[in-house]
Image 1 (cartoon, rainbow, N blue to C red):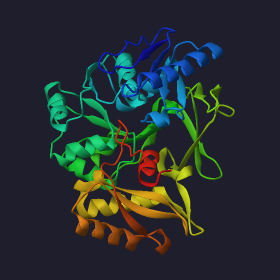
Image 2 (image 1 turned 90 degrees about the vertical axis):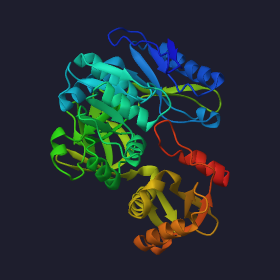
Image 3 (image 1 turned 180 degrees about the vertical axis):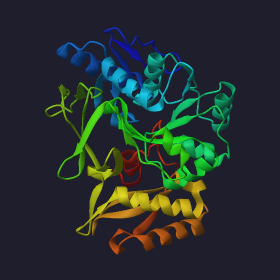
Image 4 (image 1 turned 60 degrees about the vertical axis):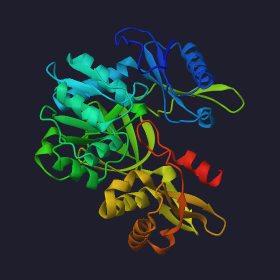
Length: 395
């Protein structure tokens, strides 16, 4: 099994053969990567897997690596997903894809297999993210389709960069895209298509339609043709289709390597609360986002959505430097804190706090502002909540 640990000199993946690969974050230590490779190799032999790719679900530090779940995804599953995305985007051999998401994420690999199946060209840019360089790359290479995360869209918007005329679609995934950011990007003509997906489904299972670009309203992602979905009695999403994972793999604290298939009768149960209507999906929160504050139930997903709206209304330029976190409290069990890397902005922070508190219930108000050197984020710009809590509260 090959281990691709250098995104600048990656292994070439043959999407038709039975070779297996494990693709890991090159920032991880050699020891951590070797440990994860051992997990993947052990389970590959145990299950006699062929034509599979192993990816990590999350994690960014050595402390977290031991808790990481690896996901085995077949090349067939990737191709099923890619065919559905190509159909949705009407992709063909005249398209040129920009690949800026890393190959150790399904968003980056997805670009490769979609281009392979449609006969399209791929332009890779794995250097440190820079919006001006990416904009020049888009223009110079006449890119027609790109896949990005909200943080990258934010940077392009903050730089005031207009979308190149050649670009006809930007799939946005890897995190929630706010209404405010969407509208700012559309004013600069960026053809954003919000999507919904996960590692376990080989990337997106729902994406806004090309027709949605004819309207200024922010669209909901639309179900792609290769999956079925339903919500259980709690409102948690379940997915069925040929793009689903084969199994998980993990090393337990006692050193034992375990693997398991989470699907039940072909259905993959997620921990995402959603609202399904016709063919559209609205993500409303994660199961582990629900907290108790002084005995009252609340949702961090909902509170963070409110906070993002408040930040967008007050000063959207600071959105990457502020965050809302559920903190341990002896009296209330949990309380809400505003975390920031901003210094000397007391008036702005006070305004954010006041505006947020006016929109939430009394027990949900911000009770403290915590200062941090920098808000930790993953390669895709997601806040690393567990790492931040450890830094702030030691747990």
